[in-house]
Every structure is written in C-alpha cells, then in structure tokens.
Image 1 (spheres, helix red, strand yellow):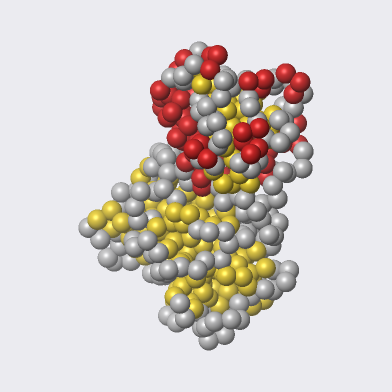
Image 2: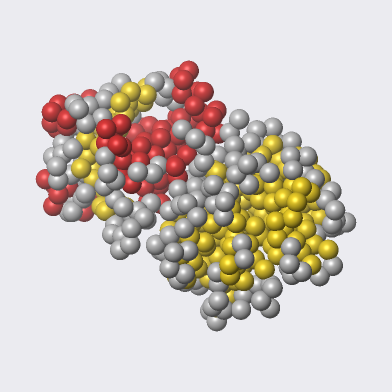
Length: 440
C-alpha cells in the first residue's frame, strides 16, 4: 500500500474532512470552484506569477494559535514555494502585518493584502486548540472563497499530509490540476560500497523510503500503471538483470533476459514492459509479456535503439537511435531531433504533444522540449553544470530533471514553459526521476 493509500485509510478512521462555506459565499463550494474554468492557465504561454499571502494562524476570537499552527504554516509555505506560478508575499511587506483580528470571512481585512498586490489569501483557524484546523483560500480582490476545508482529530504526524491535501485542492481550483501533491517520485541514490538503490519520496521532500537494498547498480526505474511495481535495470559484477520491486512489500525479483545488456525498461500503459536488449553491435527494443519473456520486437533496424518512453495512452513511443550516425530521438520512424549530434533521454508528455530530451551543447548537457505539432525544439534548462534525464510529471506541466548545478547530482523541477528551476528537497544525491500519481 502506498503512502497516499495508507493516509486515506487513516483519514477514514481519524480525519473528518468537511467542506464548509461562510456568510454570503455559502454556495461557493470547492466542488463548484473546481468545475469552473481554471483561474491560472499553467499550460498557456507567457505565464505570469500570481501573488499569494498566508495570514498568521489564529485561534478563536483572534487568539494565538497552538504551536501546531506554526508547524502547519511552515508546511504550507514549503509546498506553495515549489509552485512556479505562485509568488509568496512576506508578512513583513503587508501594511498592518499579516495578523488579522480573526480568520472568519467577516473578520478578514482584504484591503491590506490588496495594497501589496496579493491575488490570493490563505487563512488558518484553530477553533478547538490543536485538534482541529480550518483552512480557507480567498480571492483577495473579490473576497470569493475558493477553498474551504476543516480537518479534525489531528495529530502532529498528520500535519504534513493536511498541508498536501489543502494545497492539492487549491492547485486544483487555480489550475484544474492538483496531481502534483498526490504524486510520488522514484529515483536512484548511491548507497555505498559501489551500490545504488531505488528510493521513493513525495516531491515535497517527505516520506522518503528505500525500496531496495541490493548489492549492485540499480538504474532507470519505471512505475507500473497501477503504481504497484517498479521495473529497473540491475547491474551486478557478472551481468545485467531486469529488476522488479513490489512497492508495498519491498520484495524484489530479478529476471535473466536473452542478452546480458538490458537498458531502460519501461512499463507500457497495458502493464507490459518495453526494454532494450543488446546483441553485439545491435540493440533492439522488445516488448516483454506478463511473464517477462520476449513477446515481440518493437524496434529492429540494425542500429542501437534504447530508452523507449510512452505517452499516457501507450500509442506514442519515443526512443533513441543511432541509425543516423549519432544518438537522435525518434518516434516510430519519424526522426524528431536534427539539431546537435547527441540527443538522448526522451520523455513523452502524458498527452503525447511534447517530448523532453537531453541535448549535448557547447555549454554542456541541457534539457530541450520538442513540440510535436510545430516540430520546434525549445531549451528548457540553462545550467550551470549538466542537466540530464528529464521526466514529465503525470500532469504534463511539471518536468523533473537531474542537474549538477549545485554540485552533486540532484533533481530539479521546471515546467513545460521552462520556468526557473527549483531544487526538490530530496536531501542529497538523486538521479533517474520517475513519477507516479494515484487516481482520486
């Protein structure tokens, strides 16, 4: 059972979530707000940052909130600071400060937030001490309630997930997509002694879990469509193996395949695995059946063909081939990249409209995005250091990649519009990012 499922069970037993509306805005429920057109078009061009303020958490009648209030506020700030379409306004910049007389609608002084250009305001009220919190998000210039949620029967260990759930609801209302705060990243980290293993973590930097403890090199993790399994390449001092780990139990199975070179396995939308197998100077992309035996060849042309990656439907597969003399990105028989002599690491957006990839430039390796409609390539990262291994998030907006710009290899986050990269708080070296998001 993944972290989200475990928490959902806990929510049913311990955390009562109620959507509430206040005063004249009683009809503006979260569900109604989510059904409206997105306030912020994160997929459009020329994206501007909206400003958001967080009022100080309060108790009843403007009293001080319990210590848990400051802790939850910190989690909310961390979450919102990751979002490239939002700009947090410091409380010290607000005329009269960010402490209100109360957290209820009629007690909110929107004017002070209007003066500093805040578009949105988040308030937190703790009516029953540390056991209950009410979180609201308003449009500052209209006073409209965008999100209103009450979380009860709290404990300190639930505060991070409360922050994630509220930020998911807020992002859903603002953009139409909140999957980011439900997602999990798989990645690879060096575990010493010449070994590297598979880890998972939330993109907010919480719930770090080591899935494998193998003696050897784990590479290129890929989630099954249901999030139950992760496939990867496992390299020992003797051979390459296909590794498959059960995410819930941590149980690892390894499989010998017909050749000793196994490269970049990836799950298809149907739950099978596409993988590159090498024989001599030729590397073909094959499809494995549910028993991890070769079912058929997907790409066979006498060249080196690696790194198969699919869109959400499974109908579009990008991959790398050297049939043109050097590594270039293809989709089917269509060559996508022509600039540069070294283009690798494709990742297809869920809708199949974009393909992110790594290009070697005179300034080092950089991330580019190919638009399937126009055929144009757009540079999505600028360094310093080297940028590689892009991976589209399930929402098709965020793009994770590996960079050495801060020294050791870490995972950074940008977007399809190439927003300034933000380091994900993963606590150290991380490579080969791979996303999963469960259904609602």
